[in-house]
Length: 420
View 1 (cartoon, rainbow, N blue to C red):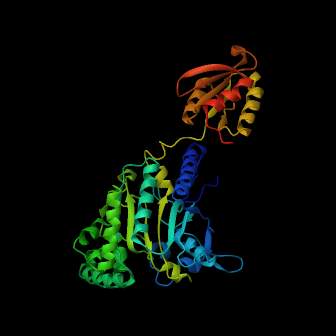
View 2: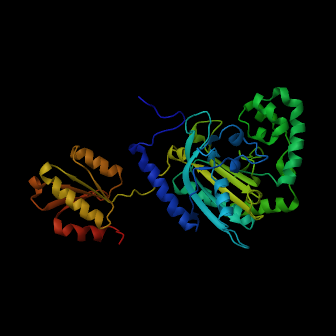
View 3: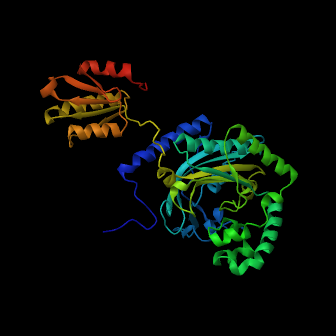
């Protein structure tokens, strides 16, 4: 037997309905925010992710890099932002005063140690707002991400926010953070010891309890930002307050990618039962990435959610309506042809309909119909009701009528919303 590769998973039909619901919800949700769908390649040029100065674990340890048959070095995308910015620049979408907003859904790849809710091939849903920078965009994006979680039924989460400053402030902060940590080097985890000189900012993201205790009195990025940046940050927080979006300032929050600057945020939940990997998603602002990739000096801000983590949260998607209005089944094989023909006709007339191929008892089929959120169950049983008659059960009102085949279409149209 050939098994699936380590760090991957099969999305079986018993679980895939939830994924489909999440995808459908995302398209409707983003349309409401006037954010457009974009799709970029699953693999990109190696240089897109392995840029000079990029020292995050994602790039130095976790990317899947390979040579194609023409000896070109490529990388399976480990995150979504860089590919979207590359597309934004390459297709010359930018123009003075132009503002672009995109969302994406798709697979990504990182060579990490597999754990529950953490795979080497994983899906993300994300959004990017690129163009002229303003603090209202930060608030809009955070609000969008917050409302997305609420919209799929998730309540048990915390929003954590920090402000990193730009390149100049971060450079000063890193020097002071490194100087603070050097006397503590022997007490730090081995991984953090290696980061003191090259990338001390990553130590703030350490999952080691010992490291986190040693960081309690460490310098804070908010002490290094300018008055203008501090004012913009407070304006963003004020908007969140007015929207009744609760948050917590976390001075150790830096996110895991080096292009972030200024505001960063993360949504965390205890529901994942993991002390070190309890984030369902997050994001932040990137001021230099567009310019680094050959575009104008414009800024962007984005977020991404891990799909597998969203799907495993307790109340995720439970409140969203299913796509099935009508479930059809038959009692005896003598009615199989009639029921299938009517099923086909209803589907062609844009009813949201499911056909229960007879392999279960009626009790099981009723359970299946309820599980799919069906509003009506159509039962074909000519031995009981007579030829040309269908039993129509309203599963929400627990009522039933018997109709002639030719009456069915009008009855359903009167009681269901049907796309023309």
